[in-house]
Image 1: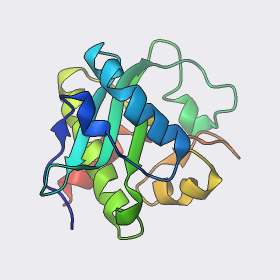
Image 2: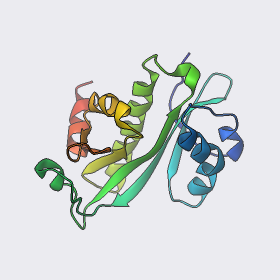
Image 3: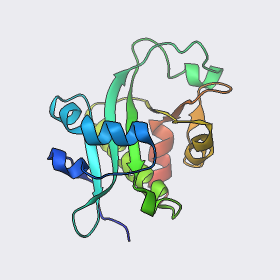
Length: 168
């Protein structure tokens, strides 16, 4: 089972019963996502199954970047005062759908939303914070790189995402 296109979150009940197995993700989604969306702090997109139940979500946020002290020379090109980016602030997939390649589908759809956003409000980089070291290889498969050795903050240029999508 999968889903079609992501849809915008429109009601707090869409978060009820969501369980990804990561308490920080589940708590944010169930208790704070709708308010954050309504207040314009994030744009939350949902993956709904055929019954309308939320099976995944991604929350995006525009951010002003600051110089990252731990950033390597490549990352410093993007992390400087005055630059802006898109933060993949939260992302989750229900436990029953994990391990089937669907996390990659969700991330790809999130990246597509980032490209659409950048067409309206240009920026140069997408940023995310891996929840822990075990997720770094997952994000690396999609072109993200840690900003420096041992860092969980990761980035990818919008240009590289655009290039990857053009090749599809």
